[in-house]
Image (cartoon, rainbow, N blue to C red; front, side, top):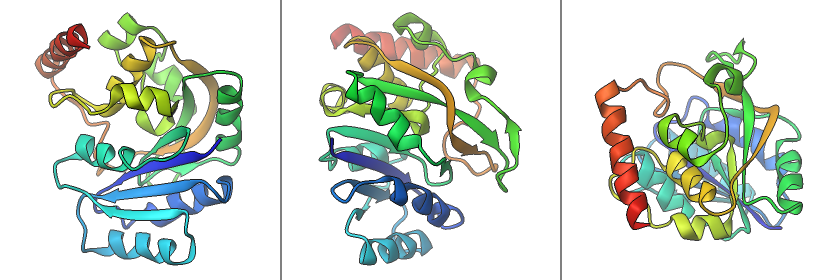
Length: 229
C-alpha cells in the first residue's frame, strides 16, 4: 500500500532535518513525504527543499498562513497514498514505526493510534508512555470528552480522510476530528508500544494548555458539527 506522510511545518528549522532523517529510511520508493510550510521563505523551506532536491519522495508546498489545522489540511489534500501518516516537524520516528503500523492496516484497520515516549528538547525521555500519562482509550464518547487522538501518533486510510475532509471551520484540532470520524466509521486500533519520541521544547505549536471554558466550547462545537455529519 502506498503511504503518504503529511507534515505541517512552521519555523521548524531547529529540528525538522532530524525528523525527516528518521522518516525517509522507513518509506518505500513509491511513498511520499509532503511538507506544508506555514512560514515559507526561511530556513525551514531551505532545509525541506534540500531534501526534496535529492529525494523525489519529499514534496515541499507553501501553506496558507492560517494556522496548524489549515496547514495540515493543505498537506492532506495532496496525499495520494492509501494510508496517511500525520507528522509533526520536531519529533523523531523510532525504527520500525511504519512497519508496525502498516501491519495493522494489512489486517483491516481504518485508523491506528500508537503510544509515544515524551522527551525534552534533547530527546532525554521524561515519560515512558504518553498513553499512560494521558489515560488514552478508544471510544467515541470517551474521545469527545477527553481526546486521546494525538496526530503525530496517528495513521489512517484514504477512506477515513475522504470522510474527514474538508475540515469544518470551527473544530478545535484536526487530529481529534479525524479520530472521531474514524470512531463513527469502524473505530480505531491502539498500539501500546511507543513508536515515536514526542519532543516537548516549549515552542511546540500543538499540545499547549487551554482553559476549561475553551475546552467546553470546543466540545459543544464538535457535537454541533457531528450532528450534521
